[in-house]
Amino acid sequence: MAQLVQGLVLGLLIGGVYALMASGLTLIFGVLNIVNVAQGALLVLAATITWKVWSVTGLDPILLACLMGPLMFGLGWVLHKFVVSRIAGRPASMSVLLTFGIALVVEGVLTLWTGNVFHSATPSYFSQSFRIGAIALPKAQVFAFLLALVVLAAFYALLRFTWRGRAIRASAENPSSAALVGVRPGPTSSFAFALGSGTAGVGGAALAVLYPFFPASHYEWISRLLGIIVLGGMGSLPGALIGALVLGLAETLTATYASLRWSTLVFYVVIVAVLLIRPHGLFGTRVREA
Image (cartoon, rainbow, N blue to C red):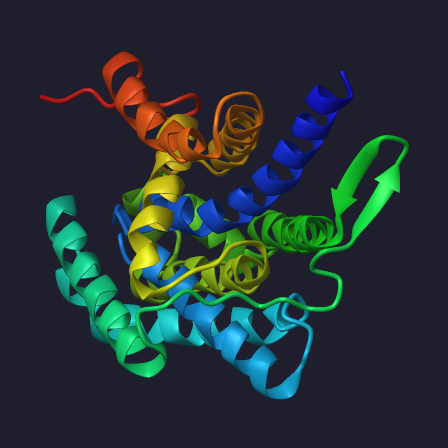
């Protein structure tokens, strides 16, 4: 019983971090109709910078999220302004090719910078745990979960209570009607893409502590994120949250009761199963084609 509770707790902790990482990807798809394949590469880029700053200065990698969020927000704004906006209105397949190219460029730069070897930030609390009876809560996962909780709450408040957030939600639901009431599509799209990239920055800081990574590991991460938003429904933020928690639990329980090797397959199995059984996911909107 204690093993089951331990698995459930760890699954919820990692599911919260996955929710943060996937929220930006589903936001970008919902507003811009872009499948941002480069989101995994931005995540690894942020993790690499976090690891580098931590190794040089000794600053806490989780707290470095305060630096990585704005940094990746700025990079995302530049990418959209000068690269991604060039394909506005084109088919979604164009966005896949373009963002895949961005991902390859990021991977190449990181390989030249740090080499194609594994890295990981290991602060002093890395191997320590809080204990509640027989349940152990790794401090790194608890701190990363709390970070994700704070950022997701701020994310929700921004989208719910600010004019810019309402403009993003209006553009996601009906771009034409949003334009009629004064929402300018260009700046709104740039802000949404930058916001999505900013979540990759914060998520990357957590990734630097929780998992070993190397430049080409962005393929694994974009697969995980796509599995989450496909399950939750492309473009649905509540769906990304539920999907992340479900897959976090599934991954942890698979590692606990089967094998760590099999746990990474959970995301690929979910992508295939959802596309076959319920293509619009749990909270996605069914689209009727003419």
